[in-house]
Amino acid sequence: MPQTLSSTSMFTPCGFSPHLHTSKEDEQGGLIFQDGNLTSASLDALIQHLIPTTDYYPEKAYIFTFLLSSRLFIEPHELLSRVCHKCIEQQRLDDPVLDKARIRKFGPKILQLLTEWTETFPYDFQEERMIGHLKDMIHRIAPCDEAYWKKMNQLLQTLNQKLATLSHGQEGIVKISPAVSDKLVAFKSKPPSIQREILSVCSDPYTLAQQLTHVELERLSHIGPEEFVQAFVHKDPLDGTKTCFSEQKKTSNLEAYVKWFNRLCYLVATEICMPAKKKQRAQVIEFFIDVARECFNIGNFNSLMAIISGMNMSPVSRLKKTWSKVKTAKFFILEHQMDPTGNFYNYRTALRGAAHRSLTAHSNREKIVIPFFSLLIKDIYFLNEGCANRLPNGHVNFEKFLELAKQVGEFITWKQVECPFEQDPNIIHYLHTAPIFTEDGLYLASYESESPENQTEKDRWKSLRSTILGKT
Image 1 (cartoon, helix red, strand yellow):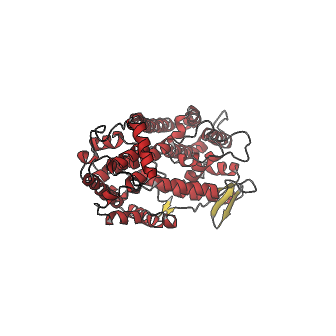
Image 2 (image 1 turned 90 degrees about the vertical axis):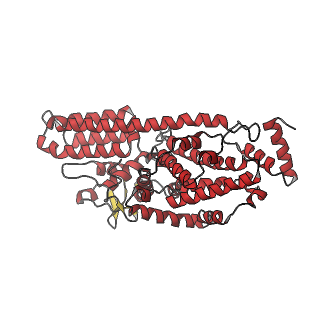
Image 3 (image 1 turned 180 degrees about the vertical axis):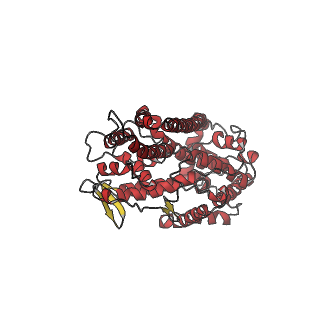
């Protein structure tokens, strides 16, 4: 995975390192610094700062921050085109006779930049124009050193393997979705329409928490860092003709992950509302409370919140007779941890603890940090909305993008952790394909289990029995 993101020069114990040192030359090139930190610059100056020379190479932190944020102003293929053009111009790569000594100093640096770009933002290179620019640059420097041909082939081979792996994973996720959505409306009667339940597939809370962590990390692995930026692309005020990525907002993996969270919420609620007997429903609730606790201990906060959200859905929470049979002390503790009060203060404290554990970890088990994803998206959204992309003088607000890179960079580090738990295909399959009720189906199942308490509920029950079961 990306070397740039595991580099100690990019991260400090507190996260992303914003300190970007520069040479005197660059200070005179339209870059504005404050206390040694780059705060703003024109887009042209930032592009120039990205370009290596014979005796200069940009810091890893700068490369990640600029490649992440630049797509708000310029599409990746256009950026790479400009980078290549400037390199050709500055290194005189169009000259009939190349300065081989100069190229041998410059060559490794441009190759390193292209390597970091392909490793960190591989989805950018799904476009043929990107590959074309990459090949053209290497073809220009290759006559000076035959080793460049070998490096280019290695780079392209690694890139193709990564894109193939990501594409295969995406196809797997897509194949699952239609089967699940067809079953959303399969609720015809209760409970014969659903043949299995979670406890028959997995009765151990720790095992299910481990398998949920497998699903989370697998789905996270397909989300590119650029998706966080592309989710909030707006029209660049200095470009009245177009919006970057106007034809397609490339956020499919991010959106698929949010859909997984929603599915898990509904799966939990379905499993609770499905049993006909109160004792069985209480048993399922207690089981999911234990699963949620194990998710918390693992550092899987996304599954934890999905389980709590599922148990707090109205069709579940209204089952008062069922809840009276549940030992709720552990549930209230978990609810307290994920309490939204104080902008999720308790959760953020627990997340910082897990992040610190991850930094000092000696095993993949201790490295696991899976954040509550919807809140991460919300944080990035408010960061984006709360600060302008450009300053009044037209400069890019680089200080904003340093903070964005800190949040996204930390997430990218977490998503690269290899799941240490053994995979159970049967449980994974069940989590992805088990039929789940729609909201109406959940309410009907809930009313069938515990009768409506007021006229509004009675009217809704009657309506649902008519529309779903065809009964009056």
